[in-house]
Length: 415
Image 1 (cartoon, rainbow, N blue to C red):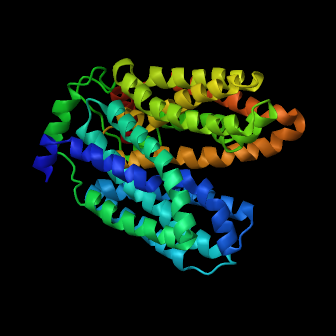
Image 2 (tube, helix red, strand yellow):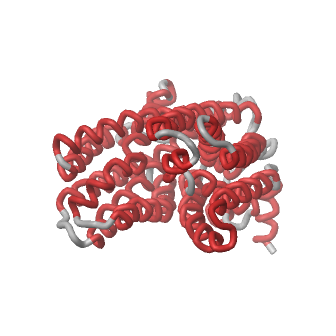
Image 3 (cartoon, rainbow, N blue to C red):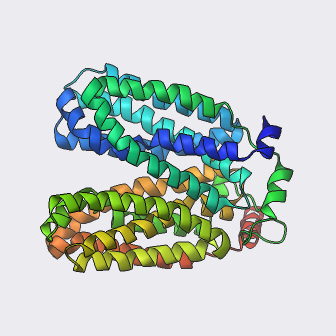
């Protein structure tokens, strides 16, 4: 299998796209949420908290998934992930209504944890097959899954209308099991000479010294300033999008758009997200991850400032632009992590940086609650603009000479 994949690395890319589609169920939870609330007897807030809990388990268990990917094999980690994601759908079909604890401990744990194992296995493996085009590979994979989500949104509505919410979840579980296992069983890491050969073809090599890629253990990663600056930038940038996107339609309607045009803003933003996920990481292959990510966070701040001040149709354009640059910056996280900390422990190290998603998702609402009494209705914009400007500064402070950083850590350990 390893020999086949080195000759046909597009197969790994296809597997990564498929896995991202299967694990992006969180993106259509808004379709399921009202039906789940009605079927299981939950309040709207309880149903909303389901996906937040899934994100929490994803962030924590992706570290374990990455470790299994590094120490055992990507195939084993992916199989565990597929079984976890499948089991969550079966649990959701079976559990009784009226008690959300069953959903949190069953659905959320297995979905979030399964996605953590599955995504780490496929992302780390994909980067090893495309060391010369990391941005393109991760960007294309993410963009394709974003397009799929648009289709899945309408498909989910039709499935629920025909089958009901429980049978729809069971059907999702069956598809995940069959398709996911097919992808998982194809995964195998390439040999190190292949990675070295392809890495030499990169337009802008990772700044890891003349000796090639410098590999850091997870313990060493946690002792580098680069790690904290990188995850800090993502944590600070997340609220700019995540605090506003759920209320986009109501914000547009409050400033002069009719409901139809306000709803179209969501669809246009989804298309812009897909474009950003592909074009920005691909450009970062040529211009460098650090420079490109800093530019995207700065552009996010500018677009959010524009969105805050305009009204009418201009809101649609400014939000689409923000969606493009924000999603493009965010999708580079895995490739940037790999540039900095190497391939050998890439699953574990990407899992560590994925914690930024969990922390940022929790930080935004906390800041909004704490600061709204002082700043009023524009608090969400101040948090987003201030956060992305600080995120830009964090990225610009990252020193990319990782060979020197590795030598510093080893010298300190030897003392």
